[in-house]
Length: 80
Image (tube, rainbow, N blue to C red; front, side, top):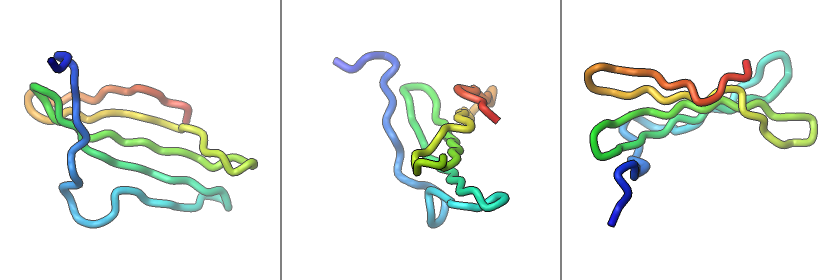
């Protein structure tokens, strides 16, 4: 029996590339986007991380954009 909050990651729906690496003032960043589908709604998760001096990545922000009506944005983490 599945819990009522169960979600599944959806295959990529838009074009090539699910992540993007970029530089700002010589520092490495990476942005990741993936799709989720629950029992009632779908959404897109956006994650942005910054590479630290030891090579590890620190979260900058995580938010979910829910599709459908009403559309909604849920901010999970914002360290900008």
